Image 1 (cartoon, rainbow, N blue to C red):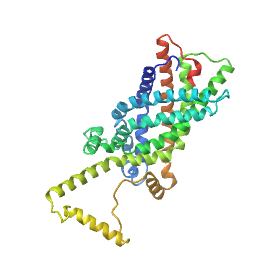
Image 2: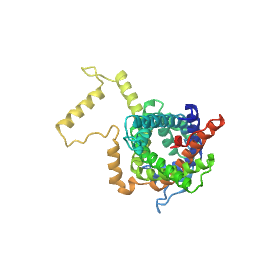
Image 3: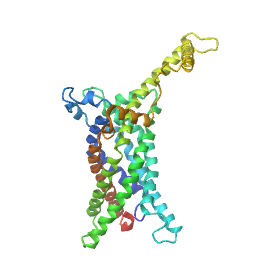
Image 4: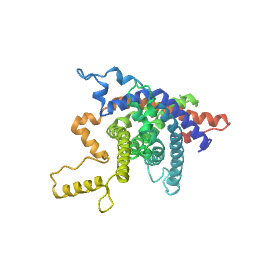
Length: 356
């Protein structure tokens, strides 16, 4: 990309992420609490079902973990996105005799953003799990919410990556919708201003056009993908409890194996009992199996539909649309302005074509 180094992209992405995290994080906390299965029990009045003050306390709980992880994840996202987009665009033109390429530009943008999102999610998932569980910690607790959450994963840190599939499953369609729409809107606004002689070429103008285009595109994508976001929130909120249960189960099994009685095959008596129960269940289907193991995204979605209907899958959609409009506008507006500023500071210019 003309005028921009990888360092520029990393710095601009990190600055954008830090700015957005600080400004719109409280809205994200409220959204998480609204989507949680404990919303009515913890955050509403029993008599009226209206939100109680607890919903709006501790709105910055867990923000530290997100800031630490968002900086490298956003840098990785934008670096991957810009380079993949440039590569796909170049290949699209060199392998086709058509002036606009064989594959439509929106598809290239969607492919580039999807690739970048997979890289970003791998870095961001642990922080997202910590963040959402910390957002649910009681604000009256004397211990830091993030520290309380981390303690639950001490014996099973790999559980922090539980929810990667759900996070990617939400972010992939989100970015596949947002970025092509964002790029198109930005191009249309620039063309409209050029035709009327309103273009000034300033960093402020570029940032405002980008912010408005990104905000509108982001809000549309956010509302459309709300059901996936609700399921993702449920999975990540259950990760902490699952980690604690698995750690306790492992300790119990280890203790039984070292101190308990063993059968003729060297297994603990408890293990033998479990085997007998499994055999009995196979012979008699009427015996209900024990409810263990992680639930799939599809199963969680079905449970939400059964308990709350379609409204449950769209819970928090309006709030998510609002905060995503603000977040995406600030995020990409600051990002693009930062790219231009860093390039201009070295006496280099970014061509207008490089901004699309």
